[in-house]
Image (cartoon, rainbow, N blue to C red; front, top):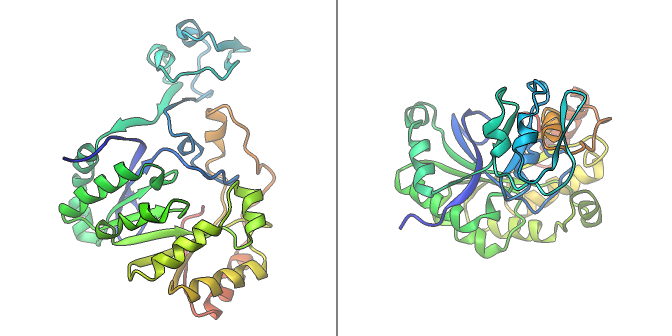
Amino acid sequence: MEGPSGTIFNIQRFSLHDGPGLRTTVFLKGCPLRCPWCHNPESQSPVPEVMYWKTRCVGCGACVAACPEGVLRLEGGQVVLTGERCAACEECVSRCPAGARGVSGKKATPGEVLSEVLKDTVFFDQSGGGVTFSGGEPLFQPEFLEASLRLCKEAGLMTAVDTSGFAPWEAIERLLPFTDLFLYDVKHMDDAVHRELIGVSNKLILENLCRLGGTGKEVLARLPLIPGVNDQRDNIEKTGEFLSSVGVSRITVLPYHDMGKEKYERLGRDYALTELLEPPDEDIERVVNALKGLGLRVEVSGRS
């Protein structure tokens, strides 16, 4: 049997920053973390969500009339969500003539995921790429993730999992036979700061990384570099020292960007970091040099 279905919100082809070669990245919905710099806010909720592109809206009111919950209102030519009872029934989506409303999230089986991924095998063969499962937090749907990875591995694909590591070790351990590479986020070494910023402790994350480093699996650490949040010298040094101590020798620095800001507006949510600027090149270079000085192999990749 191929395993249980899950909820995904995107399958992105020709990804360059989610592992070696050209990748097809499968994005799973649901995440227990709440990083304020998250550029995929539609990934956080485990259920489908309606998104609204106000620049496409023609103000016809068709969606307002169609909403069975009565939570939409037309104000000044724009549609406003007046409550939190939206059930993502898609009535407003199907009635919108301008394509201003859409749903993020749909059910899929592991077999359906594999069928989509296999369309890209020619690019994997030429570039040394494969499939990456990301999110959200893919381990938020452990059974679906495991079943999908198993099918991909049986099909001869190179597999990767992009994770925060915030999951029971048993869930990670079950993936080991089917995962070639783990992309593992390390956001902050101070537990109190981690709790304040992201909403959860980093203890389980670091414990799991320690155990994963001892399995012999290839692990690529990833550091989202957020100015004023985790770019301090002390935190960078502690990050590098910890990675070296658990047998992880490679890290990718992902400088902050705000390219996901408009997605918050589409979800009717506020973006928390409106005043934050991207880190200048000299700050990125400082972090890279500090990590290299601790013996790590460092690269800078797509801005995250």
